[in-house]
Image (tube, rainbow, N blue to C red):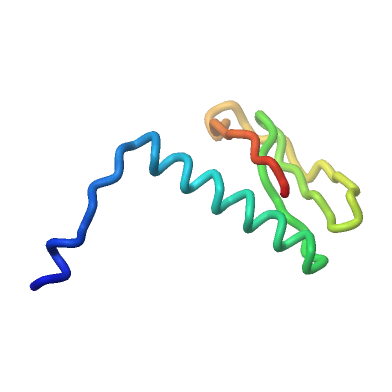
Length: 74
């Protein structure tokens, strides 16, 4: 039961920052490993290949439009 005393509540902004950093690191690691990544830019589904090529895969319908954030690749 001692483990419960060490649980810390994260504020939404802190959690969002952790998620953004983890996603950026994951994208960078995938590209370094010569894997493609797929993400949305607005209403467009995009594939970014490890060689830097960007390929449009599909346009999403308006009801499937998602909110996305930009991630910096380190």
